[in-house]
Image (cartoon, rainbow, N blue to C red; front, top):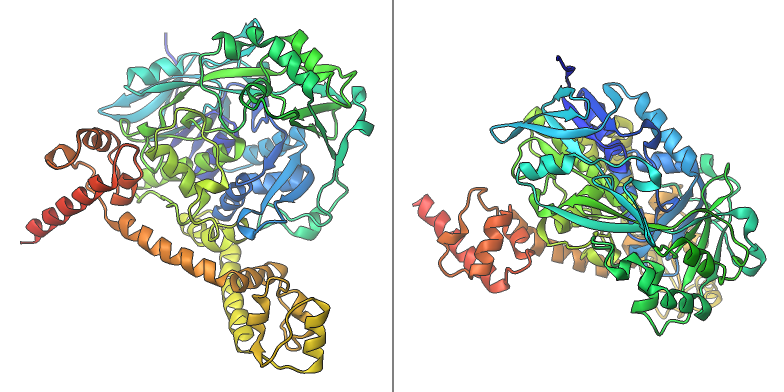
Length: 629
């Protein structure tokens, strides 16, 4: 019986946030791309929280946008509330977070995909990868159809052998009751790929009409919305926003949970997968933090055209009757009606140490991977991985060097380096604390850091590229001008300082020195700065931050210089560490398995000590010297 055979440049498996970015990147680079999804209706689905961004995650979205990705543009089109988090703290941890209209988000992303040249969407389940001599040559569907491709990107999310669980109920489906993908795991295992079993979860969705909002604290969006995308005109997205609400669990809630822990699959052993440490279920919180007498519950709308509300902070896998009982102890939810039960979901994912820093499988040339399938959690982490995997699949086909961002360039670099270098035995979540150089990697300067790279890849327009060159120049010129603009001790100056509770001047200074004062900033000094040029807000922001934090920024730049030295010391791909006699056995095993591309990456591998790195440096230097002579 003959089967369908088709030929494309790239196959992307899965159309979640990772798959959408991978497919768009490949197609926009001119490669004939086919995007497979189990259901076309689940494209860019938000099966869990109805938002994009948040602490550190907002950084990822803005970096993705600076490189030429789509998520930032899509949330700007579909948000219903937006807020800049952590504004009371320093700029390194400021982070955008927006509530999405979930249906609109999916619809707009699908519209973008369907109208992108070189991109075909296909509803089908991929069951097998096809290889020849260690190189990917195609993928096969459940129907037996074969698609011959030069590269593929796996973005299967939480669908592989997925199982949704609450109480005694175990349902073999993907998120939201969608069909699971039950065959690809076995194909990957047959090719020697190591798989893990991870778990995540989601809270109940409830009927808005059954909520008493008068017992909750109303949470508003920002008065002036900052867009996620650097290409979005800020004036075009200012609109009336929808409120979110805050309430709290209490001791009665916690007692109901404690009384029913024996019925929780998390504690009964019914759940095998490892869950996310930094996004625990409510039963996890109650057990692990017995001293806490309450936990926050964020009540968030799922969209403008639905009454479903998301109960953030109360993920659970407790039985249905217990869910009703515990939710109804929360102020404002006493008469709540559940639309969709909370549940845990187990799924197969890979050991991310199987990947190189370009997100290509070490064992299969031409096969790349992105998203929760790599052992991460979150839409934003998924999207940036999908984008980088798609870009590097395109680079592989074109015979070009892969695009690899290091830890000093982007949060994306930190995320991917952690995944492919460190042993991750639980879903990985991005946090600002993971970035060593976070004062340099701010969300406000993502375009300055990454636009040029996006342009070199081919995904940023000439117009955006030239704007960045202009912006850099204007920032530099304005900082120079302020450093050379003298301020005397005249009455107007002293009155200004007195008004702002700032120390009076005993002698002249510069405008830049005044900006550095904690109680002052660049914006406040407008009334003293008579020759100030007209500049866009984004330029003014950069001028203010760069002057105010100059000392700290310079210190981090010195740290980056040291980091770059180790990153620049490359290690041959076929290097055999067992030849280095002074290395410890554990280090030899770890290094031979992970094959780091540089001394810097080697130094971050768990089980490789500073002493091992010193030995390795000496050996490699002797090796280079012997080759020269």
